[in-house]
Length: 121
Image: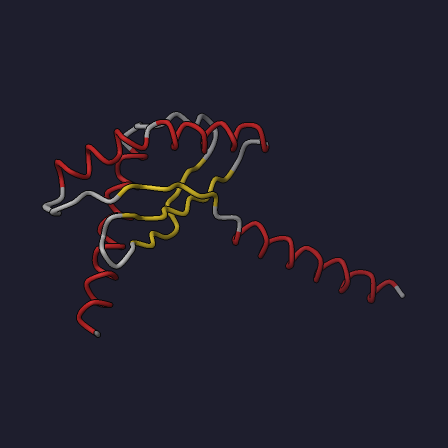
């Protein structure tokens, strides 16, 4: 069982690196925004992979556009992965927006507001 977990961890990191490299090389366009792959979760059978992406900068419409573009370019990503990696089956990618960092920033903002409010009382 530990071997399977280690293999999945390695596969997830490999996919994360290769997808991030493809994004960096301009497979998608995101002017004024930073698009980063934060996590990849691959199914045990290696047939599917959920790719979590964080987008910094831009408004909500621009972020939606980037997510749509990622979805539209999914097959291009998969073809690149098939050429680069020696997997028996290339996983089907599912891109999802990762908002954990934004939520964490919002918690810090709220804590600072409470702290500043307490200082002024």
